[in-house]
Length: 67
Image (cartoon, rainbow, N blue to C red; front, side, top):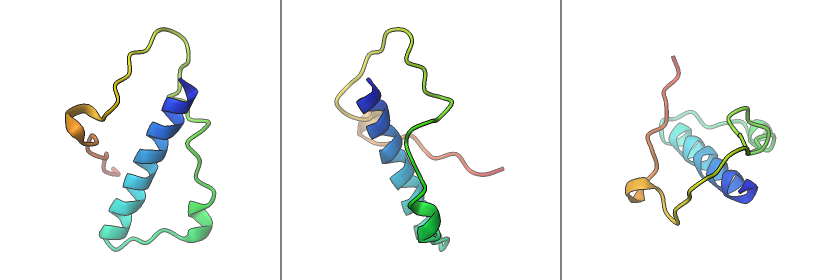
């Protein structure tokens, strides 16, 4: 399960970086190297989990906007 979470977090981190770059906000490479999919408070490894082999609807959920 940890591998699935790390993969999913990594996919969304890359999507966020791509979104920033596409909107003219190129992140500092020194900041990017410090990003990690681990250690997020949203990770809860208690309980049962159902996974699929693809994102819902074949695409990622929309990123949240700052605000």
